Image (tube, rainbow, N blue to C red; front, side):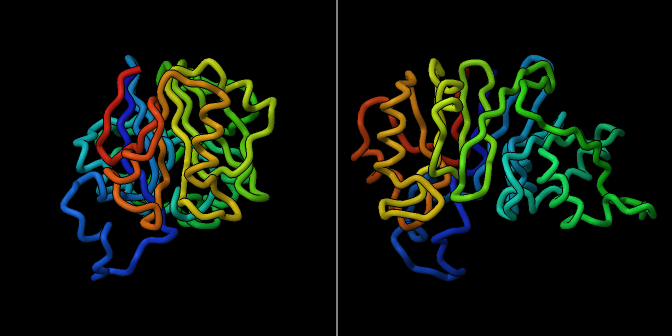
Length: 253
């Protein structure tokens, strides 16, 4: 299984166009962070977890020509806004895109992309086939996804464990029964928004502490805001076995 980080950034703490902050002006390509998403490729196909506003750009950058499904963690705009662009994969494959989401997230998709689900199907709109995620493992493209329910302040968000790989974004609390699903992961990806306390995201130190508690072989931080600083500087502070992910990073699991 191969993991490609499509984006490791966030809309929160991102300066406006034309900003001259240290992150925006950094010459290091690892500081160019699009909205958070990953591509998971297995022997039988490819799955994207979340399709944010940068989805089209990310697919073009990685030259993705075949995609079996989109799996959603939650309904916030920075994680669903790019769904319209699955129409390119409809054209290439000749079939609807499989979309996996909880019932609550499906309702949000139907509001945001009402024309997709309308009784009157306008030519050229995305074609989507919805499947409901429950709190049980499900199979997509030959890979088994174990849902992990975490909390994003008061909003339940799903992380996923796929084999020895666990991916969690937009969280600031994980109940103990859900932590048990993470333990034993070889690779853990966890959100860390900034250094200062935040109402709905782990801080850098909180993420490091949680990673130490579950003890994966290797951990990567994602959903990094500009407030965190530059990639090289953050990495220099991190303990062994923990590092910042960056857009385009590829891992084999």
